[in-house]
Length: 206
Image (cartoon, rainbow, N blue to C red; front, top):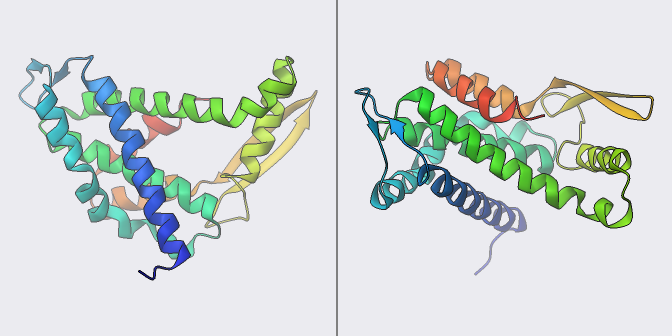
């Protein structure tokens, strides 16, 4: 079998994302009630959750072209946009499974926090092993993340202004490729709920 390295890497990346998001969504949806589009409060059973998650990849495939991956300047930037694709796909899968948009956004936000927290634990692990100073841990973790995946070659990739004040690293993101993707998707598919789902599951954690 003869596959290009980039194809292998992308397929592996998507497989990991699907697994990670599916595990987090299972954990969230098994432990909460949600409202359906008729306003009834229900609990999803395991077959319901499994059926919802089976829609994840078809939904992602349907909206992936809006990502314009060929315009993005680095693998890290493409990685984060791919996460945004799966975020939007998960939101759409829930809404297409008769879940109220507001409850879908809340569940997605909780699942996203679960993933985000674990990713930060991994990124900060080397620094937690070498220092007990929380300030150093935060600064070094931010510096690492600004190299990958948030490296900032400029629009249409990440564009980030950074400065240091009193040993604090301050960042101002002037261009965010995942947000650009969701804005494009929302506008071109007339889906304002997609933008709100992204805001609540990406923009409020820090």
